[in-house]
Length: 188
Image (cartoon, rainbow, N blue to C red):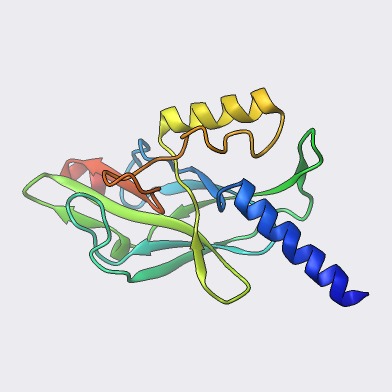
């Protein structure tokens, strides 16, 4: 009996992940500009489980925002609430939020362009121990996300509506690029 319950739990998790296209980070979004490199940044993430989530930043980025390598460092742990939010179809989703000031090692200054930049992501650890990055959004994507979820009355109402932020190659963006214009602005 326990084996059947474990299998059912795994299938529900896979279903929830597939209907949510992974998980979502709604804050910070792609258009968000922190007050400075030391200012706390509001993180808000949504997950089909109450398992811990992890905020990470790329150790180095290119001036275009992409990580220069696959090396991300741990910043903080997001712990979803123990009580899920339930939609009209009975599907559950867990929210997690935290204000976090990124370590200085997360920020790169690009003098030729006069901006500070950080590449952040939220990940969960799957059953195989692999990191699964969350889907990200810009402001118009967030409007699409909320509109489609509200219209459908379901957490997965946004699936196949192209709300998620996409990189120039068309792939879903597994991170968010934060940028602060001006050297002094990043320090204030």
